[in-house]
Length: 328
Length: 120
Image (cartoon, rainbow over all chains, first blue to last red; front, side, top):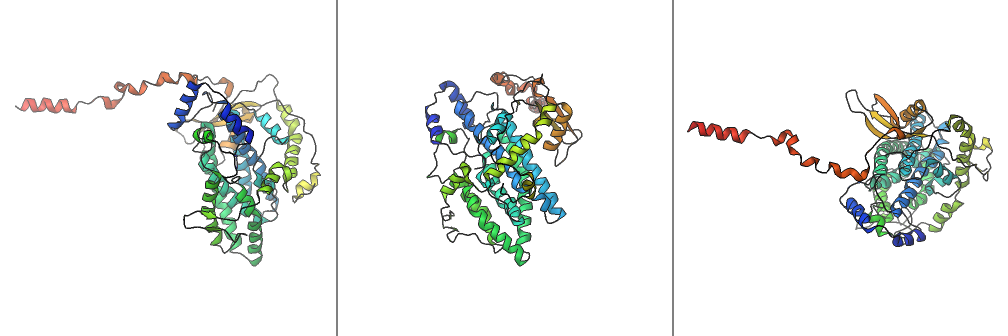
């Protein structure tokens, strides 16, 4: 749920009741069915625009907020090589935020509106960033597994129907593959290191296991579905399918290091489907609604940056310039 | 505020500060990137900046961080003129204009026919 495709009950209801011009809708849907992309100047259903804005905006906020727990470790990186990699990764995340805000802007919501909505709590970001990075091993696990989960989600979404979002995601996936590799390198280094290094890695994996399962959103049987979002290629895979793909790709890479996950029921069954103990979905809801260990800190830091940097932006502002929606 | 980050601790942030809303916007620039000398300069995305120099700086950070770059261009979005997407159909018949393609002009058959005829 980098950019969550789960609908609220209200949204699901409205989606089925909004009436669109049938001729335009048909042309729009057949364009998508032919595998063509939708571009910003095209006609699109109100709900398509709305859901995409919500999803891309959430994704953009996730990139920006996601850089915070990692950024705090730059000063404490264990050596120069790791510090260089971490600075590069954090800068990438902010760059990804920039790309995604622009993509969302092409749909008609301004960047300032999005930033305001992040600060006033109207817009969400991924739950996974509301957990603390306690030790250096957390940075290794975030780089490998949180970015790994994000890549599963983003590669799938890059096959979607909205041109600007797909273009941004293609660039993002390319850059994230570096995050993944340096994260894996970091994890392997700890796992093959001293007893203490293995212990902090195991501890970090234990703490990130549930947030990682939560990452893809509630199980399919619990989430509001929309056939339309699938048809419009806004949602391309179900939460359970993405979660399964993630487990399939990454669990063996942790197990081969003789590190475990804190779940005795985690195993691949004969059909190739991963089984695991249902994580606490009430915790997921609690964290979304502001109750996670770091929600308040993340927003407070963003507010500080916003306020401390305001005078610079205001000094640069040219009052005769008008905001124009980006082209593509 | 409870935090694990020493730098944030030093800021002594309070969780409830109201933020004054920002409603002013910087200018949007379309960014064009040239990967190598001799290659086309292609559109890669958008940055927000207060002036062209800042836009170039932002473009360098967002689109020139890795890989090869020889140059970047920035153009104010409001200075770009485009066709309406509803006019896309004006290009519809272009692919049918095969007489503009080199492959349309095939003479080998005719030459062979001519040569066979003159042998007789």
